[in-house]
Every structure is written in structure tokens, then in C-alpha cells.
Amino acid sequence: QVAGDYMFYLSMKYSPSVSTAIYAQHISIMKNGSDTTTTAFSHSQNQASIPDGNTTFFRAGYSMNGTSDYVDPLSTCNVTSGTVNAQGNGYCVWTGYKLI
Image 1: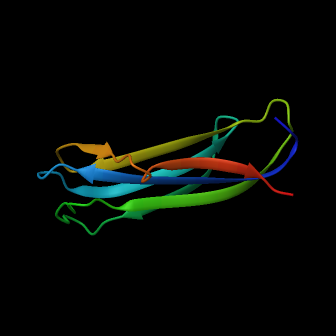
Image 2 (image 1 turned 120 degrees about the vertical axis):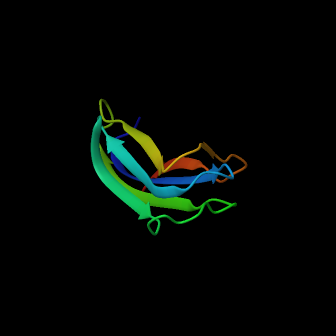
């Protein structure tokens, strides 16, 4: 790892089952194990499931020391019942790059 300023991007898309009602999606980018940035997408109360799911995304910039700093993605999805799956095929993305 090289010390400097970095930009990180996280995108999650959940695919609910037919009987599932998603009421909140949360994503965070954690630096050194601490939740430093969070975004949430909340659905209307008692909203029926959305067949194609919803995408939640977030980006954040951090200064990294080049030796011990690290970042982790975290995503959760709250449902009233049923199950959800994270969608693949480019819908769930975790990336980062060093700024010049």
C-alpha cells in the first residue's frame, strides 16, 4: 500500500424474494474497523417488495498512511419477512483508487 489520498466506491443491489418486503438498506465504508461513513435508503412503511430490487451506493475519500490503514465495505438489508440476495453481474461493486 502507498500512503496518500484514496477514493472508495461501494454499490449494493439486493434481489428480494416474492414474499419479501425490504424496508431499509444500509451501506458503510469502514476505516480501521470503525464505521466512518454510512448511507441508508429507507423504503416507505409496509412497501411491497420491488421485483428488481434497489441499488444503494456510496463513495468516500480517505487519507491512508501506507502501512496500517485499511478499509472494509459493509452492507445490510432489513426486511419485514422473507429473504434477499445480493445481486451479482456488476450490480455489487467495491473499488478504490489513489488520487493524484
